[in-house]
Image 1 (spheres, one colour):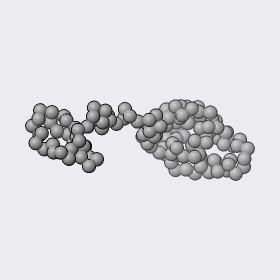
Image 2 (spheres, rainbow, N blue to C red):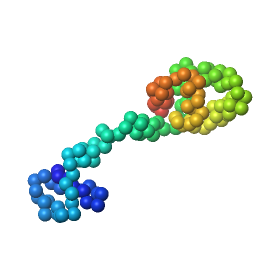
Image 3 (cartoon, rainbow, N blue to C red):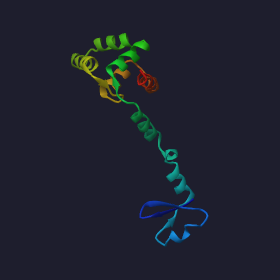
Image 4 (cartoon, rainbow, N blue to C red):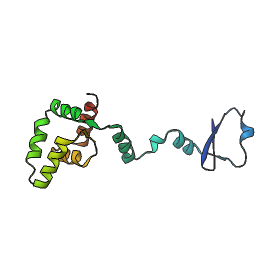
Length: 136
């Protein structure tokens, strides 16, 4: 294929020349880098962009999924005792409500992030736990 741009839009024409009559002066031939960037945009993403895309694949967990995953990873009691031992009474009550009253849990929610930090879990550990819980 031959790739061209026109008004910011990408057009692809057959390499054999059978569509060359369609390529007018308004078209600008794309460089090899531009073509690669168009065909393989994931190669040009930053680590942060790749992380954001990955996080979007982590769907919210139901209460059941969340608690079963904690149980099966020996974290259920640890989470509950960590919440009970939060020194700040306002934060402790908030986390108790978040934990006991939530219908679903979002991977990037403030309460989940805070609890993971308190439990000293790495992002990779939480991601693996989350992916496992999504299968329950």
